[in-house]
Amino acid sequence: METKHRCVVRIVLVFAGIMLSMECLSRSIITRIRSQMNDIEIAIDVYTLHNGKRPTSLDELIQFASNHMVSGKPLLKKEDLIDPWGEPFGYEGGRTQFVLVSSGPDRKMGTEDDVFLSTSDAYENSWKARHAQAIAEQETNAVQEATSETVETVQPSVGVEKTQTNRVPVTATQPQKNEPAETKSTPWKIALLLGVFIFGCVVAWRCFRKKKRI
Image (tube, rainbow, N blue to C red):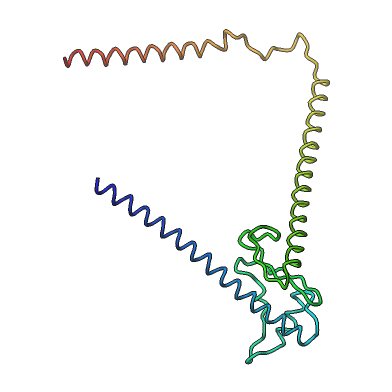
């Protein structure tokens, strides 16, 4: 009993350790992505000071930041615009506002795991609504395309079957493919009888051995 309890305790501890390590990994990724976003925000602020407006795209920002040196290093590099999941950050900027977003672990914009950095909640909510609508439209279009393809593949096959049955009429001289029910069932009956016979022999042999032991 003690050995069983120890095994159970070990399994629980291993499971708890795995869950804890996964939680720590998730938190480290979030910390990393927040740090990346803060660096991009600093580059956006420097760009705004030099140009009097927000950059309209991340390409415009990286062109400026790669040529703007801080302590002998570029303010921002191209690889800094890639999130920890290997996807480029999304960005939308106006004259005074901007929203920066990572697609998150699922690598899809407009889903619940997106990570945001924005100048206002209204700008962020506008981004979410537009991308959620775009995803819904894509799913609807995919369903419609799949349905139309299914209908197109079913209709030609029906037409082929009709032409084949019209071209090959059944005549009395053609051999019948369907065999009588008795000839079909005869092998099954023989197999069933053999099975019953073998089973009876095994049962009788076991009974005989029991009596002999007694």
